Image (cartoon, rainbow, N blue to C red; front, side, top):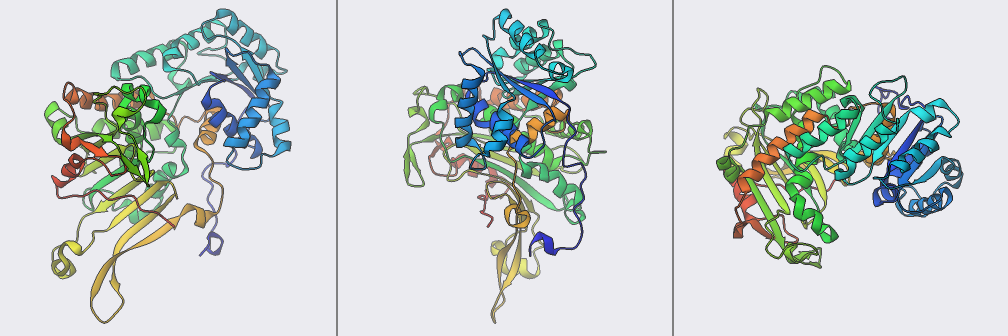
Length: 516
């Protein structure tokens, strides 16, 4: 049954069109991959949907010699490749591209920032000159210098009638100490409310739907606690290997690359308490409370509750893959994890005693993100007594990507004269139900940054709390080489040690399911 066959109307909690003021968006590191692949396509699509401010400018800042016109031509070619809708609408592009400008300059050159200031001064209205969104698509090590320079140029202020905001990409530091230092540098020149720390996972439609699903459906919200839930599994699997990112991965590993940000954010949304309102700070307050409720891990508990893994050569969908230690820029004796599995406990009233299992890895059989709520088994009478382990326990899965949707798993009778039972699924697919476009994460996040809505951005205390969790795990791993049970073949679901982790409480991993 399609959506238009149901009675009732759509309830617009917030206006579809964000209230946005004329502004200028300055992208530092504008000649990089992120700008061409994500940022400009996102801004183009916002313009196409009529969601950009009535007047805006986009200024690219980078050291490569380019003119406004040559930069526009490069971006037009990139849009052919990276736009989510094809072909590119030439009329929209013609209007949009007139607002693109390029400023040549080195990030360390004071004169370059003066040139940027002159470019902005040349715009034809005061909001375009003073309402400024600075997007730092640079190395994190350059954040502090760029922010200081734009402040010294008089473009970035803590107070004033106009607004200025900073958008910074992850990673937000590489441990707690560096995250605190970076946050201190950021807030020397701006208020915390002016900082938008981006985690693109929070821009995904289905990640945002977690709160909607939980808090607008009474039949599920009353089950969302320790009395009904046996355990929770969060899987973020990647079919690709490390590839040409070996140098970065040697410094990061799966724990820093995926767990500290994406996975802990999804965990917070799945397990947090209802916020008092939908205002940004109310939502972010509850996420921080949840992260602070995660039971601290001693070195001994890390050994029992956390598993790391590293892939060796194997095949993924028939394609031969090298081992991690054979990847470019990777040490031949590297102990860096390409896989991590965690068993975490949340010490609050709602989740006391319920294990949360998180796993992520490279070179796994499929790329998928899924949250699975595994409910408690029925009492060992009637069907449970007769069927034993073959009677499946109920489960609810939220598929974040791909084929976004939700499915409910329950037991049903097999047709026929005998009394047979089999688990079945009730599926909900976003694509088949709504049939509407799903915006890219960067579209939503850029629009929120322009509008000044901080709900989807990560607050300082969120970042630091997440790093405390990750640092305790890394400390427990310090100086310990990988064991044989922690290696896994490319194309499998991870090391044997990860299965052992769940077996401690009689649980098993469930592979993400396709939703059709």
